[in-house]
Length: 287
Image (cartoon, rainbow, N blue to C red; front, side, top):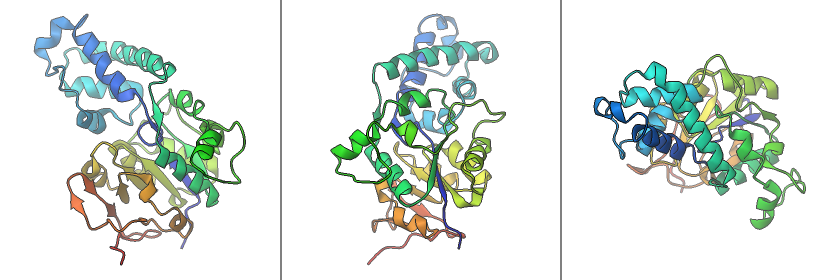
């Protein structure tokens, strides 16, 4: 049974709680309440319509222009072809301001999991469509986090940022095809020197899970926005609400497994999935 040799991480929504969703929502609101006011009556948008569900299903994980177009199409904004660039630029200017103001946080469970995968001997890469990913990652001091949380690892050193910690950084590049095309993840696997079948992708968006599966990789879906059903429908091999629930030790043995006995629960807000496939084990209720 082949072991998982690499872990490939999306950034926004997996590693950091970024202001991207806020920027997409608020930048469209500003446009619709100012220079685009004249077309509001012909669109389906209203201030409360851009929900987290809409963001996760139609925008999250996509390159900037694709995300902008997806949002405009969803809200049936007229003349979208001539408006998409303005919306994308307005969003980008807003998200940069928010990032520079420190309007984001790193997910502690994700940082623990990143360190655990390195300690398990796996290679790691960040692979996000966002051109802002490096702005987040270089501001996160992994050594400080480890010290504050009592984590000891031979892979850590003073002054280490999360960006420095990755073996490969393929975020923010211009690929011919965005997610759900697997190009970004296949590139990450290639730069890490591993076969796609020996890599696992950690994603929070259905488009990202679809991209991982299209590339022949295993996928963990992180349902931080009460969207477990979307991730499961995208064929994620395991869906959790926190990466603390993933058994990092089992990854070394070529298995995807949960640390806690919660696999049998199927409530709307917490649903856990795993698929039986080579290198993976289905969820079982532990006794």
